[in-house]
Length: 196
Image (cartoon, rainbow, N blue to C red):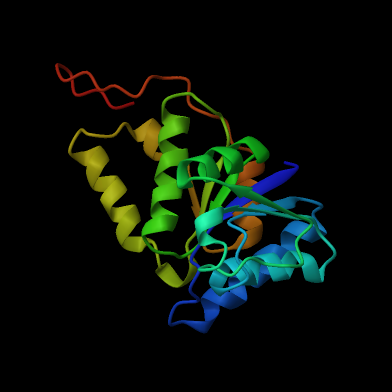
């Protein structure tokens, strides 16, 4: 993997460990010579992961819509800052630039980005690994919801397994480097309730 897109909050959250782990992830990516693609802000978890990469002299590409440039406070020390017109263009550009995705704690925007990339993968539009760094159990409830989707026949198990989850950075990167995209279609046969 040459570049990984990281989706995360423009706030830091209430637990210091979120920012600590975001910075550690950035440092790890730089040490592994993996470039960071992210939302371009200098604040919150976004700023922490970017600063982690920059501390280790790594490459950071930010992608920021013009209308968020002042609100999210664009990071001025990036390798490159790409300004786009819309949120959708931002997600498309971040997808184009990366070989995989890691999701850290965040809010609506983070989940929107995560699920769009996941949906594109489910539809076969890309074969990139999608990881969740589940810091301090932040995504436990979401993981339970994904399992409920499988149990209720609305999501195939093979598609649920597209979400690579770990609370450990090294373990998550290992899973991503060894990821193989599913070859089955997303649709579930109601007659036999097949979800494999």
